[in-house]
Length: 122
Image 1 (tube, rainbow, N blue to C red):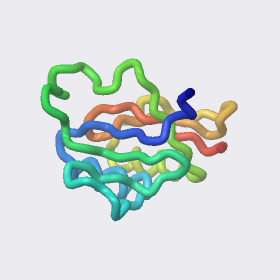
Image 2 (image 1 turned 180 degrees about the vertical axis):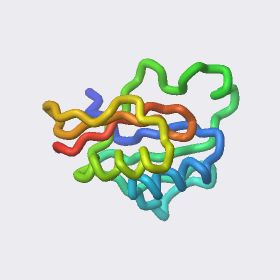
Image 3 (image 1 turned 135 degrees about the horizontal axis):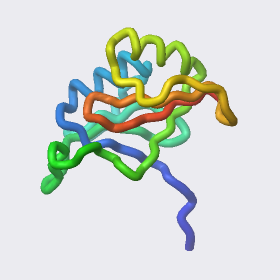
């Protein structure tokens, strides 16, 4: 037996609707009809991505930065356009766009402080 790879990623968030709206508005993600009431699952491929309510025992306010030590990268053919929209909206840009082995790449902080990297080369 062996694990075949990741097939679901979710972030625990303070305000489910605020976070879901952020990912919809700025990243263009679409909500999936199949989601439990405590989460918003997006129609992403090949791996499902979701935001969900905080689980019992987790206090996001007690950590300096949620997700510290983990990297979340998402593919976006229009990474530069997304960067420009996030910057214009006053979102925190952690690292400015650069061209590298994964194409145009930048990192932003979402409303809960998770650092997410977008790149345009698949």
